[in-house]
Length: 396
Image: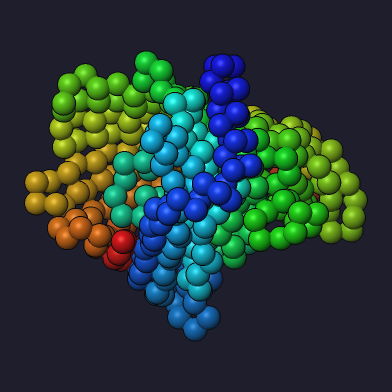
């Protein structure tokens, strides 16, 4: 491992010092992009609360998400590869598939430097990894606590050093350096270092961008010296049977936890892990995962209801010979006693390369706890709803 690390570091620095001359060798440039246009219908059982999906529409709205990037790379005769990917901001909601970074690939592994996903985000497997249609994005259409009673819910497997500490209006994640080892006996290790989650790709180097990754009301924080780790393994029993497994995690130190009046509190260290696996046999696959936040970024004086968070999911998928695929996914989480579970039935149809129509319906239910203004523990009556999504993805 140390030998590979040193060798990869040597290649990386040689590339950086020589890039202005080597890139003159006519690099390969590839443009990639995609657009996902969808229509959503949302209803819930809080009948006194409107289900607005846009400013002037109840229940129904359109949405679009896109990505676009340019990838320029050069491959030497030895197989040593280096290049850069540049992601473009779009007017639609960004799919987070495109970011800006430079990379180096050799027999010693792969280096990435910039605002790409961390090793945990890139290597993790969840119950949504084999799901059809949106792959778990039903939660962008709904509000788990429409009456604002105080329950805080976790509705996806987004990790702290990427999704939970970025601006929803921008595509870039925090700047980082990532290294992936070569595969050895079907094992691969990835590691990312994030010096400061406020050092995002759309601001200057010393801009302090505060976040609220645990949705703790009134408080924001950042994370420094973040480490993201991933260990993946895959095995093929034969041409029709295979399994892949990943254990990923992250850690980091919280800094600057303040409320609206400037009062500081001490939060526990950020530590999480996710374990997931996917088994495939012929046209059928099943995937499952479990994640635990391990009291990350919590305080016993603030998180009175509890400090534990865990989530899990399982999904089954079947690919038909005519290009259609269907999946059913179950997701559940418990965030400091506030629980949500969701079941999604989805299908998609891939008959023409680059075009993917899809449809899905999700039924979810919540049961939350909160502390009222008199500092008493209260429970919600239970909230439930349905999200229906129809869409088409076009990629090139």
